[in-house]
Image (cartoon, rainbow, N blue to C red):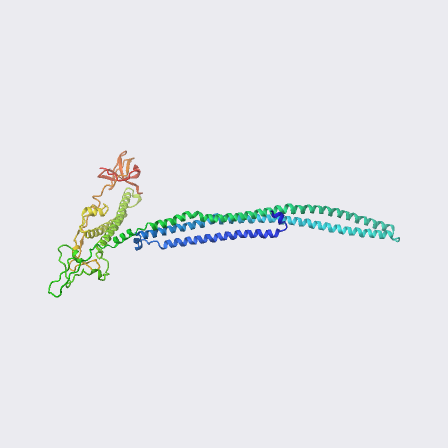
Length: 556
């Protein structure tokens, strides 16, 4: 079944059909392009949706994600973000593997089609030219035959006329012979051109056109096959992401299965537990007998300090009916004394931890400035050491301020826990960095507080909690600091005379312990013994770090 034999006379229709085929390809490319745009839009909307419901940093929502149900929801949002990514992959793959490839193929197809139909038109023009030549020779042969007949008739007429001279007859005879010769020549030419045309026509309809139409047929079949392959690729691109999408959905299911209602219930207890005991029974007050009505020993106010006389309020205990009284919405005190004991303890501990973190940042900054100043002292061309004095004093002032603030909250925390902060306890809370600080002297005012209707504390009119902090000398801050662990050894390449404060002298070839690497300032901290350590230029020593060291190693 060949177009060349079956459709030999349908050149124009084949031209229209192949153009329609190219239009179909371009239509499919447009379809895939719109699909990629939909996938990108869908992925963008999913990402925006996931981002919209993500918890905001440093907000109350972030605290809510302690619960397993909220964690599962957060995992769902993250999985949806990955899910959106797969739709972006679909869009990218369809663009690269279908759209770009098909667009390039369409251009090649157009060029091939143009070339084939150009050859077809060229063959058509050639056969038409041959046909015109045949028609011209045929008309010329016909004309010459007619002219020869007329010349013959004229000769015969002249020859029969006795009045015509012999010369005129001879002239007519010669003219008739000439016309006959021209007719014979035209006949021979017409026969030759006809034979040639028949040969050209045979080649046209049995060789040239079949070959050209066969190429067009093969071109069209390749186009159809290419379209089918593109449709398969269209489905395959979707199929490739199905496993990953399945993993995203499995992640959502796993997150849902990780929800622990018991754990969430326990978190609610930890979040809102007040630490109070429920109030006891209310004593019967007999107004029929003149007697002193005392406060019930089982009421909430009995939980105050031992031996403290209970205040009277017109014969009624202020703390007895606190669960049923409207809560006081005043400003939050600095020591969180408006909160129940357990909640107050958590708030104070959180505040202490925040202050310690801020203090550690300031200490690191002070150390960095001190090292920089030492570098300036050693290398004046790098900078003026005096320019750092103001910044160093400012950082030191901030450290002292934070230290006093931390001591104040430590005192309140110890008050809630029912004890004064001992030296060891304070060192424990401040991560071992502030052992040299003096314990603050505070007045324990737990017994001087009255329970308010909402379970918080209010100060007695005659007594106020006063925290007195004894300021410790800043220079003694690190007197009891634990020695840093050694992280390797080093060998002195040159002799170094440590004349400035914080440096240490070394001799060439001496081996020492490395306790702090070069942090980019050109200095390495080393130790010779427990009481002798300092900084040396990094270029003066060859360092051998212990890569396998897991824990601290103390040298005595």
